[in-house]
Image 1: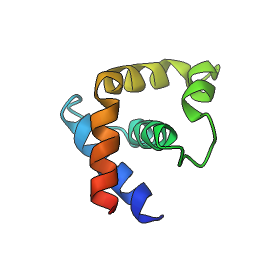
Image 2: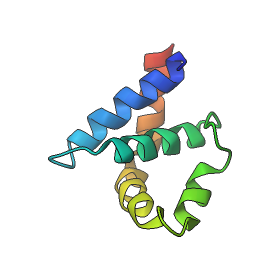
Image 3: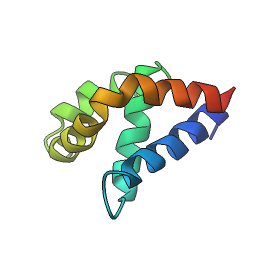
Image 4: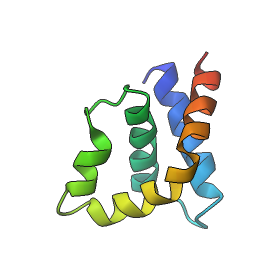
Length: 84
């Protein structure tokens, strides 16, 4: 895991812990990959669209990413600063 991924993971955990009492590892993965997708650094290109359309994961993805959406630019900036 590179510095950008580590920073994304830490930022996703911190953000989600402020929203949910119990943070699920799956939610952290969704959040981390969504932020990395915004930075064009996701392991899976177009992650947000793909997970949002997925027949099994779409509900969880929309829940997590929907909560992050208003904060996405701020979260991406925090990740870039932390990884620098």
